[in-house]
Image (cartoon, rainbow, N blue to C red; front, side, top):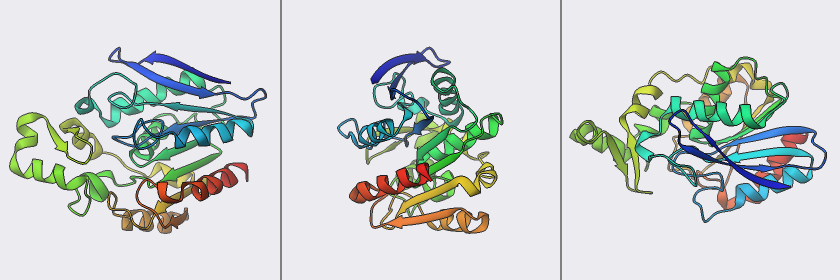
Length: 256
């Protein structure tokens, strides 16, 4: 059964939640999408995360997708998106939809992995059994948001250097006409991926070897230093070019 609902965030903005519920539930899986993306994938025209959610539902998993505020079908402004705000939204959706905080599984993409890490740090009672990370931002500022090697970060760096970001309160990221707010930069300065060390034996990272959004050397180093399995596909940041194999690998890990 597929259902949809809306819940409110702290700013009284409506968050769109989509749940894929099997007849007999053996566990829960929660998705966290990336910045500028949505619960469906890269854009609202995609559906590949929903395709995966249905496969997981057919395997007995209650699977929860939702849009962070400022994304997809949720309310809110893009320039108001911040790490603390997204983390609280994940917390609210989790509290609404997940009854098994010990043993829950997570799938997080890009910025979604930053949010998930922040959430797990703030909620020590949540004990995931499996975590799958797609192109995660373990170091969001260094690897992406303030990296001139990133096609996403270039616009932000240019806006910071010119003073436009301070003047306007946001940087316009041209790739998706996304207004990236100053609060996000400030909060990401304090983010640490150290929490993922705790879950190194139950975490796998999938990345694309043609990634121009994220500097993958940061992920390579973090995974190597902390014993986290990392596998690369011949894809871009989104992994879309080989998404079927990525999904097969994701399901195999969740089921292992």
